[in-house]
Image 1 (spheres, helix red, strand yellow):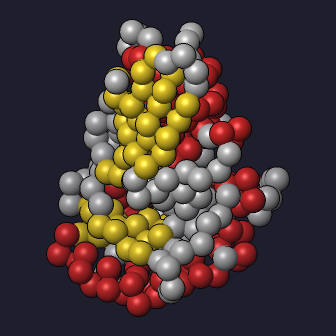
Image 2 (cartoon, one colour):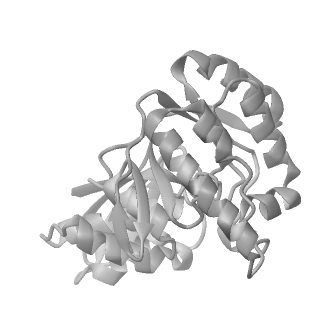
Length: 281
């Protein structure tokens, strides 16, 4: 069987709405081989249990494969938690199907395909290329991420679909809000590059998507506050939520994890991760 995998990702990173994302070292792994009929089996800690009609990996494979495939999926990425599980599914499913057909598409072709399926270019770019990415008019940029920043993810025990979270965002904003957002993005990129706590402080307070989303989900706001008060340099919604992404210096990770574990509630979990730099492979 041919193998492919793609990483989780945290999109937006605060003010970088639909533009910035960071790949994380949780992966969706797919194995595929040509068969007489289509079939898919999900195993692993984060198995998809919906119908085949809604299976992202199967949908991606059917789109590119000339022949039916037998597929096996081992997924580590929490579903419907704002960690790019659908982008990773589309990426790994597409790549595994190509390889089962004796093809090996380049990152550019794979990105275009996944972006069309996913609808979110930031998550798609992170799943394909890995690392810290920015997508501008379909072009992928690779900003620098300071090695001093350690990702910590707080994953609540409940799901939130991106389509539902999108409904919380207003259709337009004032010019003043847009100007403040541009400033926050500039500070965020500099803070991510240098690890500067002052720059990351200036990036806090997104008004485009975080403010309306946390107004409807105050638990997220409490988690972000707990992370910052315990030493995290940055805390934001991971994608549409409900998960929270925090960035902390390695020396502060213990205190941040403890604070998040105390605040997250029943069924939640906290993970210290690393940036994934390999992307789809």
